[in-house]
Length: 59
Image (cartoon, rainbow, N blue to C red; front, side):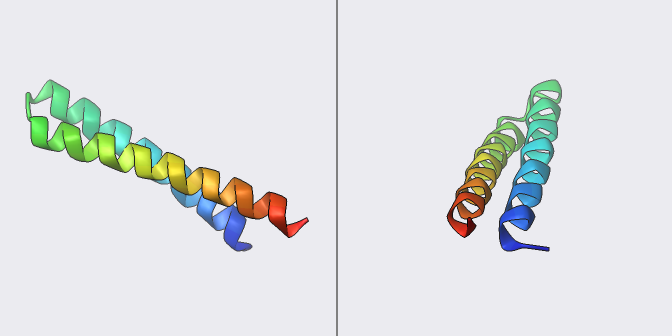
C-alpha cells in the first residue's frame, strides 16, 4: 500500500474514532474524553490531507 493511501485511510479511521470519543464524552458529560475526541478527529483530518498531498506529489 502506498504511503499516501495509508495516510488517507488512517486519517479517516482517526476521524471516525475521534467523533465517537467526542459523542461519548458529551453523553457521559466527560469533558476530558470529549477533548481527546476533538484532538484525535483534527489529527485525523491533518493526516488525511497529508495523504492527499503526497498523492498529488507522486504524480
